[in-house]
Image 1 (tube, rainbow, N blue to C red):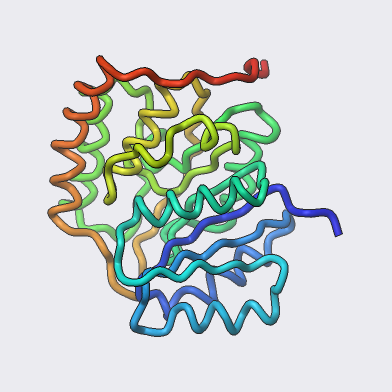
Image 2 (cartoon, rainbow, N blue to C red; image 1 turned 90 degrees about the horizontal axis):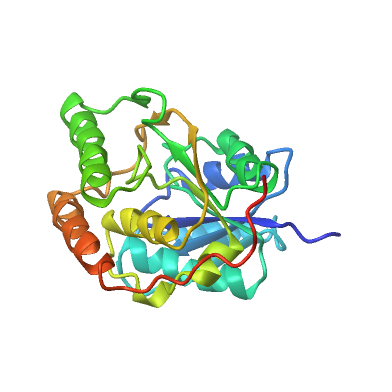
Length: 252
C-alpha cells in the first residue's frame, strides 16, 4: 500500500467523549489521512481509547503519550518533529472536539497540494464571522484579538489564532521549531508570523467553527493574556531576528 502523504496532529487532554468519533470521522474521508494523537496524560483515559483503536487502524493511527499537561505549543512541536522524521508531506493541526470539521481537511490539503500554497488556515474570519455556539463576548474577543495581531505585526491573516492549519513539510523544516517561544494560543500566532517572515505563501480557507458540545474547553484568561502581550514581544524581536527563507520557488 502506498504511504499517505498527509497526517493530522490532534493534541488531547481529557477528550474521551470526542476522540473516537473524531478519529473515525477523519478515517472516513475519501482522501487518506493518518492521525497522530498527542495526549498529555489525560486522567479520563483518552489514550486508552486511542490504543484500542490502533488495533483497528494499525498503520494509520499513532500516539505519543506525555507525562502531564505540558501545553498546546509543546504538543505540536513534538508532533511536528515526529511527522518530519516520518516524512509526511502535509502536516495538519486540528482540535479533537469537532470545532474543526474533518470534512474541511481536503480543502486545506488542496490549497497546498493543488494550488501551491505553503500553509493553509481554516479561517473563521476571512469571509465575515463564521462561529457557531460561542458566547458573543468570546466571539468579539477572538475577532478583535486577530485584528489587533494584524495591526501590531503586519501579518496579512484574518484569523491569526486559528488552530486548524495545514503545513507543507518544508515550512516546518525551515522554521527553528525549538525556538518557538509560546506555549498557549499565542503559539498559533507565532507559527503564522514566523512562516510569513520566512517568505512562505499562506492562504486562508473559510470554515465554520462550531463550539464543542462535549467535553470541557481548555481556554483561559491567561492564554489570552499571553497572546495579547506576546505579539508585541514578537514584533519587537522580529526587528533583530534573522528568519531563514523559503528555498523552493513559488508555484504560480
